[in-house]
Structures are given as structure tokens and as C-alpha cells.
Length: 163
Ligand SMILES: NC(=O)c1ccc[n+]([C@@H]2O[C@H](COP(=O)([O-])OP(=O)(O)OC[C@H]3O[C@@H](n4cnc5c(N)ncnc54)[C@H](OP(=O)(O)O)[C@@H]3O)[C@@H](O)[C@H]2O)c1
Image (tube, rainbow, N blue to C red; front, side, top):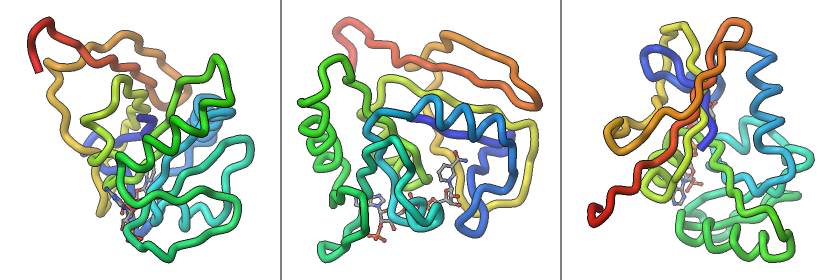
């Protein structure tokens, strides 16, 4: 999961991201480039085109949905299975990236084993929020200050015998 999250949990407003931090866009690009990227239909349409250098899977419940240059899936499990098939021809790449928005982060959270979160030191008004996650089930493994924001890497803690 790759997301930029404000201090108040906001990730979006009016189908857009309520800040423009070019270094964070560069970080998103560098992190996702070359991988399979799962996006919600709203986020994909907000971007307006398939992101170059990535294989995009758009999640929608609309069985008739088609969009140029992207694959389409109708549930998170279908998207993850499709991503697995797309990765079969790519030895060495086992990473499936979840690029949002909020509905897709929430659907994918139970399947995720890593979160890369850009902490944005703002509290803008917004209508979409990053889902809550149980911090005791995740371990912060790296924290990197950047120009005006901080990137934090979280890994899921797999407890022996636990769920
Ligand atoms: N800050 C960040 O890092 C970041 C990253 C990405 C996006 N955003 C922001 O987040 C906002 C969009 O988030 P959002 O939650 O409104 O929309 P979204 O997650 O991008 O897309 C929602 C749509 O995806 C489809 N969908 C979602 N979950 C599904 C599931 N489990 N099964 C099948 N289809 C599913 C549905 O499409 P249909 O309606 O077609 O069925 C749903 O309406 C925007 O403001 C965007 O700019 C922020």
C-alpha cells in the first residue's frame, strides 16, 4: 500500500489530492514503477490516463467497464489474482502495489504486508481518509524525512499462532 496521508487522516478532496508535493509524486513514481498497480475507478479516472511504466488494474463493480490501457477487476480478490497472473511472466517481481483511493486501501488492507506512508504535515479539509489500522499488528521499520514530509515504512507483524 502506497499512500500520502495528512495529519487528520485525509487523503483526498473532491476527487483530487489536496496538496501538491512534487517530491512525493516522484517517490510514488519510483516506488510503483515497473510493478502492477491496483487503483480504484475514481482514482484512475481522476488521473485520467494509465500511469506509464506500470501495469494498472482498475477496480470497479461495473461489469461493463472498459478503459484504454488498463486491466479491470471487480473485487479485490479478483484484482489480486489477476495481479498474480500478470506477475507470472516477471521473475523477481512479486510486488503488487495498492495506490488507492480510500475504498481500495480499505478493501486491500487485510491482504497487505507492507505500507509505505508519506506523512504530510497538514490538516486540510477532505472527503476521503486513509483507513485506520491496528498499529500493534504493524511494525514501523524505516522513517525517512524528506523536503516537507516524512516517508514511513510499516511491515505487518505475523504473530505465531495468532490471526
Ligand atoms: N493521498 C493519496 O495517497 C491518494 C491516493 C489515491 C487516491 N487519493 C484520493 O482518494 C480519493 C478517491 O478515493 P475513493 O475512495 O473515493 O475512490 P477509489 O477508491 O479511487 O475508487 C472507488 C471506486 O472503486 C471501485 N471499488 C472500490 N472498492 C472496490 C471493491 N472492493 N470491489 C470492486 N470495486 C471497488 C468502485 O468503482 P465503481 O463505482 O465503478 O463500482 C468504487 O466506486 C480521491 O480524492 C483521490 O485523489 C489519494
